Image (tube, rainbow, N blue to C red; front, side):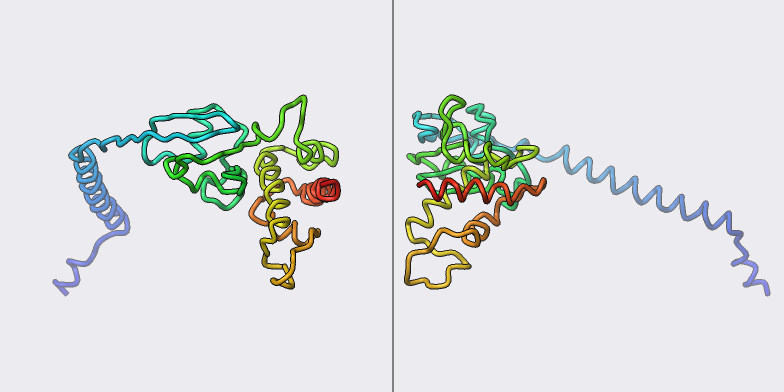
Length: 214
């Protein structure tokens, strides 16, 4: 009976004791983490020069070796038409053309493009002289909020070139023949460009008109 008295702890005492233990544990861990961060040396910034062409203009830059092509275009060259969406290569908002082929610029380091020819939405056309794909997007209202539109247009322009070059897609039935421009080919090839507003049918109509006229 004497031993059982040692376990006679009230609920209030149990809560107070547990809180005290947690406080000591968390405080100790936090102090250790702060000490670790404070003790680490500052990271060394490594820069390297790179030269490439953007929208027909030669550009020379000294960049952090970790700079992506997307951040370089937006923050160093003020070409903000190219949008940062997911920053993980999943939404296509950052699509640009490199040597005529589309890429997700958020997944590519700027230093990888020494000597390359880069085209952004600003380089496809001007307000006074739109690229046919830009004009078609306006005609068919291929955008709503417009955030994904630059990437959609760059990608659609490249899709036409891919089909004409005979590059097959997942839905191409005969790999030994020239792919045919079709709604299915377009939708498959544009599947990496996400429009959260859902303007897909309008975008497809714009593409069809340009494809028919080209």
